[in-house]
Amino acid sequence: MAVLARENPTFKPAMRIISTMSQAHPVAITTTFDHNYESGLIVRLDIPLGFGMQQVNGKAGTIIVTSATQFTMGLDTTTYDAFAVPPGAPRNKQYAHVVPIAEDNDMLTSATRNVLPY
Image (cartoon, rainbow, N blue to C red; front, side, top):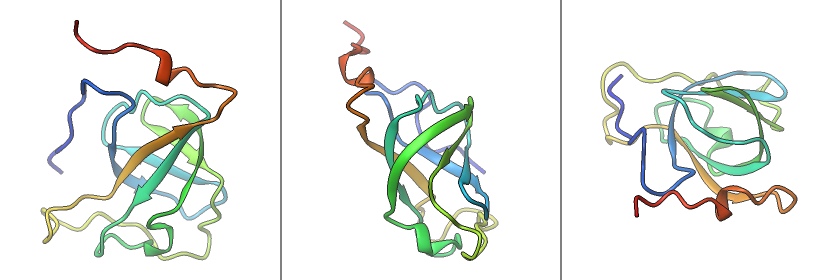
């Protein structure tokens, strides 16, 4: 799969493309490259048609980082449709992705870290 996201964006934390999602509780989500997220980040899942697991589309929650490319969310996806990346590029050119939307107030670190290049 072609990676259509910037690995080192100017503004962080940035959206990441999803490569796998487990049918488990909690759901484990794997990104196509290092996400650079921190536990306590609140994210939203955007899952276009054709990827399966439409039940999580638009859901948001706090994550727990488990590796450089994986994190868990407190969603129970055991009975949801299986997630699968369609072969080739999606027809609508939209990949499943995760979008950071907020931070746990006790954490509030990403908002105070200056990542601009000047």
